[in-house]
Amino acid sequence: SEQSDEILSVVDRLPQLRGMELVVVQVVPPGSRPQAIDAACALLQAIVQRVRPAGLSCEPLVVVGDPAEEVLRLVRLL
Image (tube, rainbow, N blue to C red; front, top):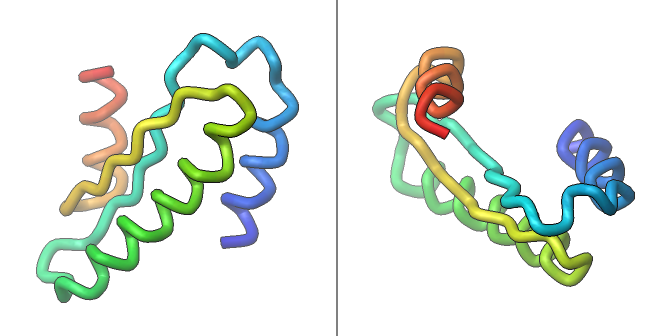
């Protein structure tokens, strides 16, 4: 999306992030078709392929659930 491209352009320019792990998350609503999960995985893999050459560690994570709840849950876990 345009928003994720904008965020990634900033991340690419932050050398202080080298040595840290970036976790990119896509939350898919419950009941989504398998194709939606596959598309989310493909999107995150494209992001990983974009930032790793810049020396950033990046972990993709696709989660099924309510976006707000899942992001909060992940923040607490990470």
